Length: 341
Image (cartoon, rainbow, N blue to C red; front, side, top):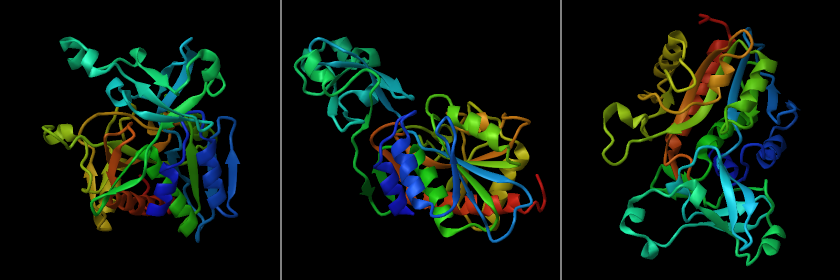
């Protein structure tokens, strides 16, 4: 599965520009039936060894955070807005690549020219500009136009024995888990939904869940790990290396206690390392899925990710494998209808 994760992380696609990721996934699903809806969500239906008594759908989003060009200045520098949540401190000085391959860098005022207060202040996104090496508006417009998007330039790098560093771990790790399940086969008939525009408001999942209306939904996501520096106890949110992280509440969803506990119980029964998301932080496609239509029973499984929404996110591959194992076991448990929650 690591090979899939590497290939997916190195693909580029901000919210609304997920074509490259979607095309890659379609090229790997073999003869399974699939559908692309008007939003761009990709739904794949996989026949299992057994028919499902309950419909189970897994969700993971294809998009990553990035930027969009909004205005070309006379001097050739490019004003931009963020696509998804990115801090100014993360953006300053970072290398980018636009959809057509044009590279650039987000410029920041040199510290040698900053006053004492400026050196301490975090840069505001509105004060940053993209430099693509153009000397004029005309030169820049030959390469980049307003509305063009760009993502971080980043390599996929192993850190130590188990960790990786890359952009877009959120949520190519969920996509990798689902694609690996599709390639290897499932016990029960299962629906896999690769969604769009999660980073700008859980938008794709809203339409996909409304169309599918499964009995159960399992959302696979990369989530915040704040286990570094002086962050203590519950504020750490999740810890890389301690297993798949099960959400009990985030800013978009309050998970049904029975489903949350069932996920942890299935992990324990099968010897799958698992942890609880210990702080209410972030949100994911579950926020749209669980309130869709008549309501959908939803659980979220996460891979703890340090430095999330940056070009240098870090996760532990053992957690990704644990998420894959729990997703498979939990999907089968829901699909067989035994002990319905």
